Length: 231
Image (cartoon, rainbow, N blue to C red; front, side, top):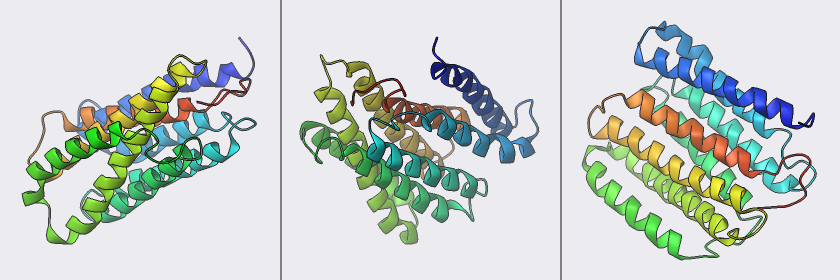
């Protein structure tokens, strides 16, 4: 075990514990709901700490934009602690996060370098929107539509990077990134369904677990400090 690997091995269990506390608190199960105001932002801060040392020497530009995306995500997490009043701020914050991640991914390969995931994610987005659109307030339809386009592009670009990394030394990190993009799309679709189409059973569990898993996957895409390769 190197000194650089120790923080990650400590941080991942802490992220899991903090995420569990946030989910339980937001669900009102055995934990005071007020703990959400601590555990939810703390979990994303821990993900930032996990990402911080990665890619510094080898992929500084993608690292910078992943960290910026995580910072915007933290703002969104805090805004959504007030789900009604903070929803638009949260939406715009996560839109900025998705654009930051997309910019990070396109520093490695150009946008839509492999077009098939964009077709697949576009069809998926259209299917989801067709079900949710009637319940979306008019004031949110324009920013919501832009958000869905950017989120789908993020997932598709991540899938393309994962595909291009097959059979290389970076295949595991490429697969992790592709999974992160897919989990982000799933998390956002669950969140939107819960808000605009009707309550989902155990919504906090499904939305938050997939959300933080996605963030960890994207952070884990960055090379460890001792690695000199790039996904």
